[in-house]
Length: 496
Image (cartoon, rainbow, N blue to C red):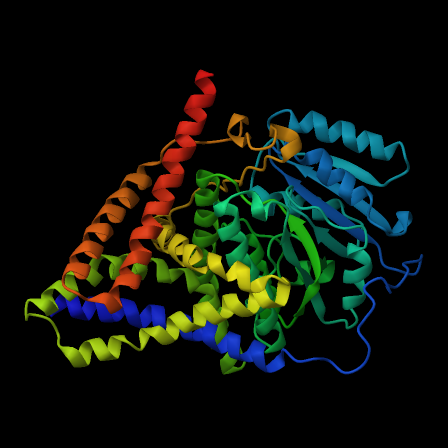
């Protein structure tokens, strides 16, 4: 039966990636033990002096009027010898961000800070092009990078630079925090998912000796590492992931600093989240297409090759989420009509719960590692799972474009900042896009389809299948509802 075969394939793919997360959760649990000796004092940091290396801080910008001054001021406050610190504002903006950045740069220049404003009149290579252009003029041995929505603490370099204790350490990544996680259900769901990536995935890959990635911001590179790997390349939308794998394939070692947190602003509107997820998904697929062959031809251990493959292709789950959502209810209907694959088939499909367990344990350990009230935060898990499923159509489109080799522009994620738009009124910003995208109508159709399927399988008394079907209906319904709500907010605001 075609329906049963396709559904089994979808579940097998989801199980594979869920088992990978289950392995990570188990690895984390094995190492999550009390360390001998006294608790380290977080304030006991080395004091940087003139013997410390020169650091260039790069701030890539594109139309960031709400947050540009906040970012520059935070980086100007970094505790580091002034003669050993350089800041590059890499500005590709086409709006008033240019003037705001230039004025703030002059302000700090007048106070003795080595800070420059490099404004390009084109966006060749997008963010990768801006970083590579700035690298030509940089005088630092090490390169720290912050996106516009990040706020590094003053001791960031004090904590990060000592991690380059061996000559083969090419990059050190810090953990992302969240400035506005409690702003809405949408930001809470995002924070929930990112916490698992940083607290579990990055940590375990690094500790297991597998390849990890620079996350595009809140990290420090050794300049020699960037140059040895071939520099920043704009041929994918994930320039950070691309350079990370090229560097590690060249023998450079990465470190992950889970105790160093750099807070950032999460997207507050659905279209901004869609754009970010599309870019991350497509960029990862483009990087997989570019580097998987090189990874498997390398002399890396098998564990590195397999984990690297799962890492680079993780977003491939999204087309199979859609396939599972489309076939779950029909398959159960056929079974109740006596035309299904039988009890043995459904018993085998029950092994999919192991994959679900991987997703759950990764989130559980992440929340427990980061927050005292972790048990309360686990209440967001159903919304996180549903929301991840709801993004499947958007992200499947990104994968399809990557596999077809279709090039698209680097669409930045707009940042608003309370100071820039007023608390709770981000939709008034000129950067806000509250239009209803065409993909939403597909999601709305899937929400209705899955809801009907939920009613039907409940009518047949298939209660064990109800939660799985409910995730599909809730996920596609959530993204649809958010788009409609935000469209109405903008319309009502414009009419006021």
